[in-house]
Image (tube, rainbow, N blue to C red; front, side, top):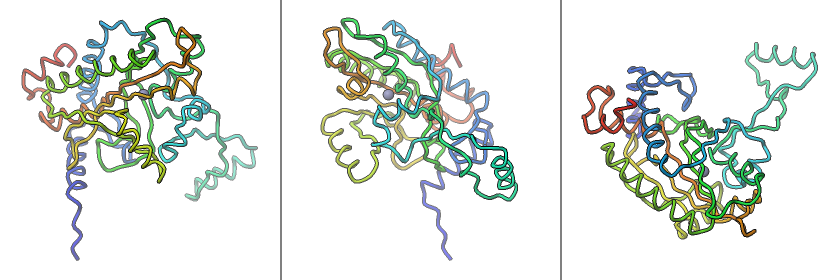
Amino acid sequence: MNTTIPPDLRTQQEFLSQLIDCKHLIASGEPGVYGRGMEFERVRTAVDSLITSISAPDCPETPRFPPIIPKSTLEKAGYLKSFPNLCGAVFSFAGKESAAVDLLERVKRGDDWGMHLSMTDVVLNPAACYPAYPAVARRGPLPPGGILLDLGASYVFRNEPSPDPARLQVFHQREMVRMGDTDDVLQWRELWMSRATTIFARLGLDAKLDVASDPFFGRAGKLLANSQRAQNLKFEVLVPIASTERTAVASFNYHQEHFGSAFGIRLHDGGVANTACLGFGLERISLALFRKHGLETNTWSSEVRDQLGNWL
Ligand code: ZN
């Protein structure tokens, strides 16, 4: 019998084995959920610091948010309409002692115990920018010229277990958000698309910037994706990692008035704010660097090491 493994899957399995053998990733038993070894973390945090150094002259506010958000934020953001298949909600036990006994018996037997859990008011954050919108809306109207937030590296969750080490269920998104009028946010997005192209070139990665769309759910999602592309709302930087197709390592998203309307973010003159965000996938960029330049950082060229030098 011919049991050929698809070429992409073989490449991904081989790369994942190498990453685990080199102690860059630490297996958990679940696909897409890995610990990180010291050298991997050095690279990931060096990339993070490089982005911080480029963003710093813009004098952004630098708030930080936890990786869990109120359920209401996810609902208001419209996530469940667009990506119900990717969301992760937090469930916990709120039953009586007899139910707890049954729960433990079920665990012992290897049976399902989900019926004893009920949904809490929090969910895992799927996009690092989400907690920023209600927080800013609560402050009142934006100042003239709008605001800029650098949210740092935040853990996000997507329910998409995959054998591809570049498609994780939980990973660090390095996000920044601009809120203001249309010109404010589009000019800022343009600036960062140009900066990103420079960053990836200096890191020696074969990067392409292209118009893109989100993986919206269902048949209606195809129409949403087409409309998103037609309006140039999303761009991605794509690099080769472990698939025939390139993998997105950064995205630049113009939301128009979506989040401004959903969360009540106002301009100084009372109009609805426009927003844009950008996200760098820190694990994917690190994986792309190991893939391109080798599994040991001390063999990387001085050009690449110099870019990350102070932090590596
Ligand atoms: Zn975002």
